[in-house]
Amino acid sequence: MRTTFFLLISFLVAVSLFAQSTQKIGWVNSEVILQQYPPAIKAQADLDALTSEWTKSIETMTTELQTAYTDAQKQFTNMTPDKQREIQQELVKKEQDIQQFRQQKFAQPNGELFLKQDELLRPIKAKILDAIDKVREKEGMTFVFDKTGDVILLFADPQFDLTNAVLDRLKRG
Image (tube, rainbow, N blue to C red; front, side, top):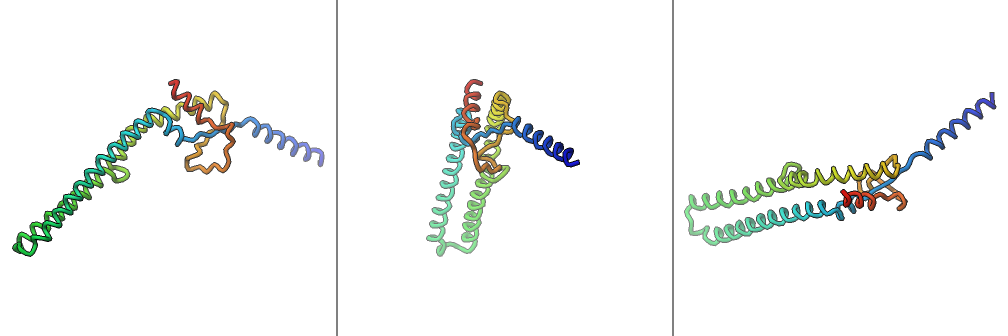
């Protein structure tokens, strides 16, 4: 009985060790890939240009509002109550327009910036994932983790870093 139990335990340990030895795990740093992959660099530059343009528009609108507010304060005492209400309504409208513009451009997840980001980066991310899959297959990896993702990777042996192989694959097409 003891011999059978010992043989069974030995068999299970051997099978477990064999199963562990056949699995290869690799990792990539998607942040590095996005920073070095030319289409991703261009997409980010396009997004930065849009952000800058829209931010400047908001700054211009805000400056105009502040100027109008200052002018109104100077003239407020010389205005009729009806004219004061009219000016106040105009100022409130300008402020609402600024908020609406900010929401339209930058609100998550439906603002124009986030929609444009999705439009530009979706095909790039698909190519990157395809390259990762091909490298994974070539290297015989069972699992590939993203070092910058939500999965916490506490240790990463550089020999299993597939980042450069993925970048090379993307460059070759």
